Amino acid sequence: MKLVVLDRDGTINHDSDQYIKSPAEWRPLKGSLEAIARLTQSGHRVVVATNQSGIARGLFDMTTLNAIHDAMQHAVNQAGGRIDAIFFCPHADDAACDCRKPKPGMLLEIGRRMNAPLEGVPVVGDALRDLQAAAAVGARPVLVLTGKGKKTRAAGGLPPGTEIFPDLVAFAAQQAP
Image (tube, rainbow, N blue to C red; front, side, top):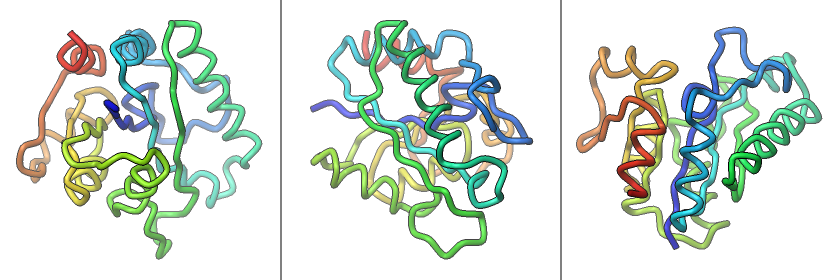
C-alpha cells in the first residue's frame, strides 16, 4: 500500500490566523483537489492529519468540524480523488496530549489504523510541526511553500532530508508521475 499523509490548513486549503470555523470558510488551494485526485488515481491512500485547537478554544464544535471535513471530502470526490481517513487533534497548544503535532501520536495512530509502517511515508505540510512529527516516526518530511511554508523554510531548522515543493500540485506530480 502506498500511503501519503497530508496536513489540512495551508496544505490542502487556505489557512487563517482566525481558524477555519465553518464549511463556508474552507477554500481549497489552487490545484490541491486535483493533486489529491492524482495521488488517489495512482494508487495512494490519502490520509489527512490536522491539529484543530479551535475545538478546545471553543471557536467551533465537533458538528462543525465534521461539516468542514464533509465539504472537503465532497470537493475531493468531485475532483476524482478520495481521502481515506481524517485524523485530528482537538486539544489546545498547551495540552499534555500525545496527538498534537509536533508530537508523533497522531501519526502513530494513523500507522496503527491503516496497518501500515510509517518509515518513508511522505508527510506533507506547511509548518515545522508537521515535519517534526514526520521525522519522529521515520516518515519522509515534505514541506510545501503554501500556507506558512515560506516562513517555515525561511526560519530554518528543518529536519534532515526534508523535501521542499512549491505546492501540493508539484508534490503530486513527483509522487505520481
